[in-house]
Length: 381
View 1 (spheres, rainbow, N blue to C red):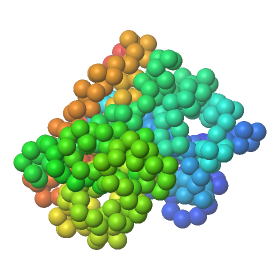
View 2 (view 1 turned 90 degrees about the horizontal axis):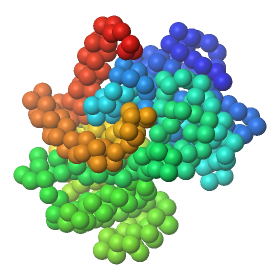
View 3 (view 1 turned 180 degrees about the vertical axis):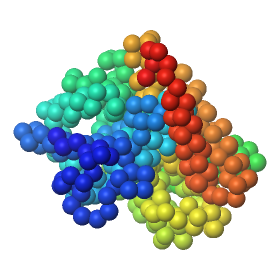
């Protein structure tokens, strides 16, 4: 294991072969490279901030083309988790982990257990959970070697599938956007395009249909589209995301991988609202302004997709204190509606895009709570 913190950023490492250091411009507190040759584990853990508490964020298992791609993704995801947890009102910092490989081919019990030992070695600075390519059953395996695992199965005292409340939170964000644009929180009669019908997208479709929305979906996975055709025959299916984006929709919901909103997509987008579950939707800085200039209301991804982290945050906070409560977590996730309304109000008052207003609110909470913790309390960290 190679461990790099802010004081050792200049140590040569395969993580940073060339280019600017990630520790510049508000980079992470800590980056850990994990390698276990017998199991084939290659992973990176990034802790962006512990200003509010231990860093919480999921583990993504993905076949990155290069280690540099994996590093860039984990750094962006960890930053997003810090802001997400801050806006959700959690006493948790932000972190993320990526395992480099194809989960369909490379995921094994030895690999997951080796990964768990690396997480354990951080002593609670980082709590992990599910993400793309990892599931509740995987977290149960990781937990056999690690105390700092959330998103475990209910049989082992965990919160289970966090995608349920992730989708619920995105739905609450859409309701807040509808309140702002269409004078009411109902999505009845609104046309919603969902790009990505994975764990979250499937639950989101159900919420939308129950609220009376007209839904169109797309996915790169043909099996996912077949599931939609079988389960929701009233949902329109298209094979091309370009057709979805240009089509007659009111709300565009990116629910797959990051970078969904680039210059070309923004220029072609027909929707009035972007509100989806994917992390890091903005391909580069300035996209939020391009959306605003086109009159598209962008719901900051790390705000509206916080339902899942609220769920696993409840699990982490109540280890040994009565356990996880789905109803308590669901009630807190309902607050995403109110937070989204507040962000839109601040954005209007300050004349900035909602993404900028959300960043400012999250940064203020991290700054102010961190300052309070400079007061030493006996028996408290």
